[in-house]
Length: 66
Figure (cartoon, rainbow, N blue to C red):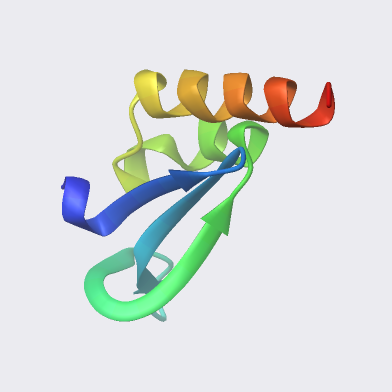
């Protein structure tokens, strides 16, 4: 799953697109961006772990404290 997900500057990027039924198709080359807050509600569909959410939250905190 790590090849379909990356975290940059407090954003969680997922390599995939939404299908018509609302599910996420991974590995399509499309890019979906989630804030840590959005990721909490999309966690199951996007396969985002609490560790990813915590990492993104800490990055946001460090970025905005500059």
